[in-house]
Structures are given as structure tokens and as C-alpha cells.
Image: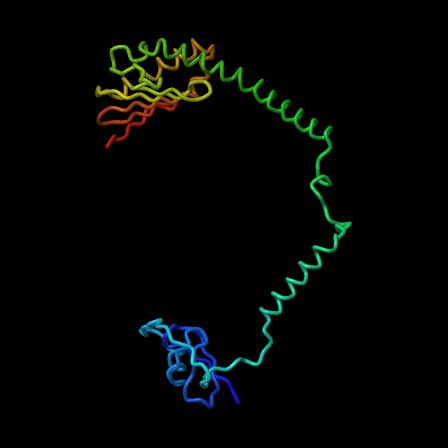
Length: 243
């Protein structure tokens, strides 16, 4: 005797049957059908419609299914787990000597205090360095903005108002020493005017920040007009198409 495998034509379950029988039977839905159909369906189930009908168990009749000759590993595993649980209820197992608990890896209190103290010191050092630099830059920016209208004079109209979030409409000043200025104007200007605006801004920045004339080499002024973008540095004026 040898067993064959197929697929149930009714519910799609795996069926196992004696290769000497012409029919096979599904142990789940009890559908009895030709064995050749089960083998063919297992090889190619695509397009088959599983009706999932209910069939009554045939009492006293022949059953066309076989049980594979192999140990029921699932049943044994369930029984073994059940026995283990029953024993564990009666025995109090001693923890392993090498097992770590949260208390074993807990840092000593003095070490935690040292770490927290070191972190506080580091934060304090950072603030001690950064805070004066921030205050210096903020004070310089405020001083420059207060007199920024003198940079443009009558050469370009720039909106110096601030929006509700405190940002300017027509300009932007950035850099640790306010060395970068971006300006937007609706006026058309030439390269000579762009150079004058640059020179005035360098003078204003040096006056308010206490910089010498050499620091002007750090300054970059970008002027955006409707048709041209002027980038002015210590090396001169570069013009580009705004479109």
C-alpha cells in the first residue's frame, strides 16, 4: 500500500488516500470524489471553483482516506507542554546563577550623580560660549537694521517693514557678523549702483560692529531686481539674469 496526495474539490483541503482506491474522501468536509480529480487539482488548482458544500458523514460505510505513517509531532508537542506546565506548578525552579537581573546591571547612585553633574557642566560650558556670541550678533543685527535705510538712500526702494512673525519683507541679514545681506527691490539698477550699496553696507557694518576696513572682504551683498541679480563681493560685481 502507498498513499497519494490530492486536493479536495469541495473545500480545497489536502486529502491523503490509498493509491489502490479509485475514490478519495476529505476528512474535513467528508466529500467523496474521484482520486484522479484530486491529483489533477493539486497540480493545477487555478480556475477551479470550491463550492464548500456540507456532506454528512457516512456511518458504517467505507471511508476513502488514509492516515500517513508518521508520528503526530503536533499532538506530542502539546502533550509535552501540558506535562511541563503541571510539573512547574509543583516545583519552584531555582533561578540560574548566571542569569542577570535588573539590579545586577543597575548603575551605582554615585555614578549616576557624576554623569548628571558632567552633563550639567557641559551644557553650562556650551551656554557660556554660545550665549555671549548670540547676544553680540543680535545687538549688531539690531544696530544695522536701525540704519539700513541709509544703505539704499535714493538708489533703490526696499521694503524694510516686518511681517507679523518678525521677518523682513525686502531684505535678509545672516552670518555671525552680519556679513551676508540679501535685498529685493522693484527698481532697476546698474552695476555702479550695486557697488555703492555694497560699500555703504560695509561702512555701516564696520561702524556698528567695530570692524576694521579689512573685514569688508567677508561681506557679500545680493541684490534682486525684476530682471537682474547682482552679487557684490570684495572682488567686484557679478550680474546674472533673474529669469
